[in-house]
Image (cartoon, rainbow, N blue to C red; front, side, top):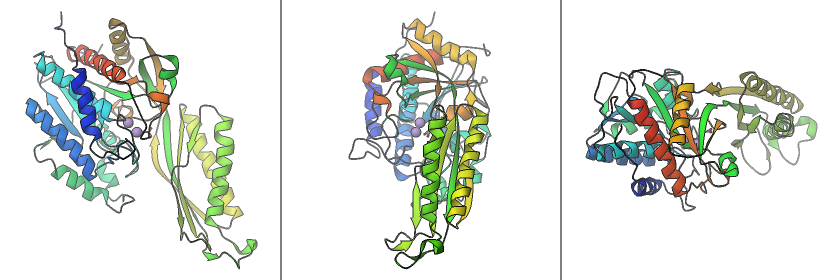
Length: 418
Ligand code: GLV
Ligand code: MN
Ligand code: MN
């Protein structure tokens, strides 16, 4: 019979408020982009709290941050829990922070109750999940899972001009208390708690989502190059208008892709026009495309649609075209045994749950390639996320963390996979 242990709800809510103050925006959200000064401050606070509790703290080459509470058998692979601490430029207080801070609360609750576990438990804050300052997202978890090494993105430059290599070095150096840990044996299991970031749980009044998989995502950067010319003197047949080409392609894709397939998602989130003068025909237009689909083949089809629409628009406007693929995340399926453990934990607490696929990508998608993984979702108000108005009720925060605690205790007591 396991000793009864509960998370301290008040402490967890205070911790969410403390971290929301780091990079707080006037509109109540968070701007704590990857490897920024604010990101470093959040890592420092978590590290200080971990060391004060007597946990060990490590980081790796990708600046993934680990906090370890030892188990009875240090030779067994640990159970890994956590998420990320970086945010979108106009992000909310919960995306990533909820999973990371709830994971830390699990460690604190166990320590306070003096409840031992067979396996060690490690909390992780993965580096750059969002990908908004440095594309692609999930760099830390890709590196951790061996999908791609962090060095591959060394020379990526942020919109603010900072090179990833330099910001990574500064972030690592800002935490001298965290020992470098080069070896990364796969964990026994990984569980990530997160807000749903969509409307389903709230609409159905179900407090816990048991995530069975994640849809696929591709990111493209599209550049049209035309010719700068005078706005007043240049007749249509002489114009090589890069923005007109971009607008044509975007309008066509918005009119066809999602109306043609209810499961498809297409977003153009960033557009840069040069030289950017009111009376100069644009010579350059560069924009990003985020396409998603649960089916791998269909996702490849979406990329082909984007390429074809852009090629037609380039021809219409006498422009040259280049397209860079910045991210290719195949859809992933989580481990049925871990999914089962989460569902059983909900049942034991008498909490309604439903299975679902994630529309957002997550670090768990990559970790699942290296270790059995799954995710727990809680509802967010109006399904809104990647928005400063993102909101989760206190009850749902505490419920999510409580389920995480039960799942972790179950997994940390196992000698072998189910
Ligand atoms: C994660 O931030 C995503 O864009 O899905
Ligand atoms: Mn997230
Ligand atoms: Mn996000």
